[in-house]
Image 1 (cartoon, rainbow, N blue to C red):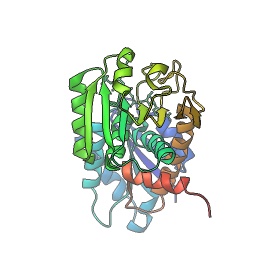
Image 2: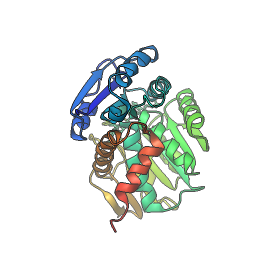
Image 3: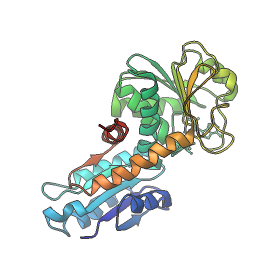
Image 4: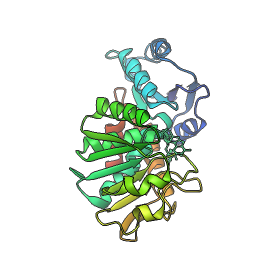
Length: 290
Ligand SMILES: NC(=O)c1ccc[n+]([C@@H]2O[C@H](COP(=O)([O-])OP(=O)(O)OC[C@H]3O[C@@H](n4cnc5c(N)ncnc54)[C@H](OP(=O)(O)O)[C@@H]3O)[C@@H](O)[C@H]2O)c1
């Protein structure tokens, strides 16, 4: 039976990236819908669950994407609400690659530092989908999380979103530009840049040889890179006394996790892959082979 993936994207044009990875992850056909809003979801899900018998429903799955993680969360909730046993299909949320990218970055940073309970984590430009999910994963691991934004109100909105979904300890501070990075980074023990492509937000003097700082990671792969001095292929290399992860090292793991998640959607018909469950998949992939 053909493996069908329903792609529900909140952006006008459904993501080509997500579609390509869906095929590479094992889908035989991807049915892509863009501009999806909450009221659209129920009938589209009914199209999935009433067309194949319960035993065959593992061959149909749903992928929720789009540029806005808050909307993505709403669509995921609407999708799972529209299903009932035994008429369920597996579902994954990854708006703008947020879950898979954040999971990969956090997994590498945690592997380098060990237990992050009580550790001070700074997420620069943490108001986008990737930053919000990374903040949530760190908060869930009981770290002391701080996100920056250029504007105080945007930071507070993102912080509230993280707290509502993940709980924990999360603060937001304003960091209007890279000049403010030295002050913002002062107390950080772990530092992640989640800023947009092609914007350098953390100059070298903000992180190099800083006492207390253990690890820095950058997800921006487009020059100029987000953290000055951290190269895209850095994969746990120590520079200036700090363990560094660059965007392609994180991206390689992200791609493995994303593809593995797509494959898992078709193994059963009741999986919900969101930040925590995607993190479980990453842990399995990273576990030493016995
Ligand atoms: N390595 C990978 O595998 C991978 C995968 C997916 C995404 N990514 C990368 O991950 C990063 C984060 O993605 P995202 O979608 O979460 O980011 P995003 O929403 O594009 O940007 C994150 C935040 O950056 C701030 N920002 C926007 N323009 C800015 C500017 N010109 N100067 C300073 N700050 C600015 C905004 O926050 P405020 O308005 O609150 O300041 C925004 O919320 C991007 O660099 C993306 O390319 C990497």
